[in-house]
Length: 210
Ligand code: GRF
View 1 (spheres, rainbow, N blue to C red):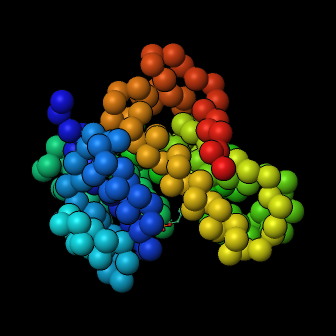
View 2 (tube, rainbow, N blue to C red):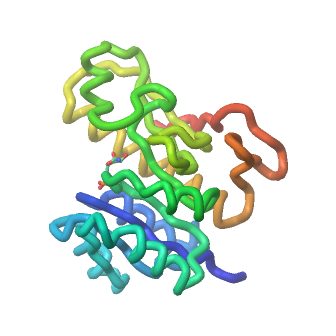
């Protein structure tokens, strides 16, 4: 079966990138990562890509970003763009042109806590539940249809522990959403999405295995 041609965009540590690579290498996700792109040349994720023989590209200049990114997507006939800890807002021309083919992981139970510092917001609000979401990217920040979410009951408001827990959740749900995309189970449909041709009104809830 034809492999989905994918690029992964990162800005930092790259633990989600590594987890996705591992899921591709294990055969769980039938895709090929053609390139890892960063907006930050110091991103540790670039080393992870190099260690796995995946070509990398750093685009730090804002003025060049849109042209270079769409050049990579078009020249390589990319099917899927994965934002794995990518901390820059994509230009509207990109989100519109590639509507339905960009997935993002966000460290909160969207629509709660869009934007940055989600753990801090959970701590300050003493939220009872926290979690992570995978969603289609649209031109509005963290606003596209949410595909999958997982939640846990917060029993400790230490920020480092929360961060670790959320990473663990992200590593469970992101590969599932990517697999659904790659296998053709999900499609973006207006401001919703379909799962096996059925329009879903709310995200799929993933029950954590620990
Ligand atoms: C993740 O928590 C992601 O949700 C957020 O940034 C973090 C990136 O982590 N947008 P990593 O670089 O994948 O380790």
